[in-house]
Length: 151
Image 1 (cartoon, rainbow, N blue to C red):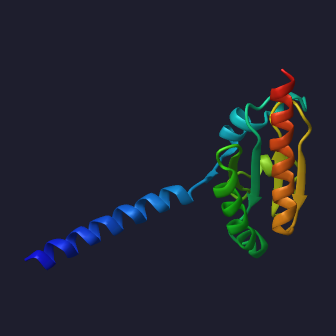
Image 2 (image 1 turned 90 degrees about the horizontal axis):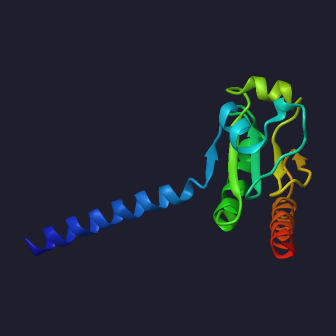
């Protein structure tokens, strides 16, 4: 009987651990057109001015895109590492064709880095080395910290 109870406890702990790690693994959130316009960049207001409280990384992708699928774990790993300072999103351009058309996205994967404050954003087309993405993220964090200390 003790073995059965210990076994059941071990299974319960494993299930809780798996559920917590699955939740933590979802640092890159799926975003749609409405949330993108409201939370990241309202490109429809004919202005490049934006003021974000935190830096944002958006991965524009599609499920049929093999390079996009290769890039996804890299972005997820960066989200795990920098998710306390940067918001990470992914947008499926097949499901958000109007955004892709409006922003003239012609090649994917496309990762766009939106710094906090009103600094200009940058993008990286295609699969780059992890260092390229990490350096862009570190640059956004450093800029945000410099802006905060200047105030």
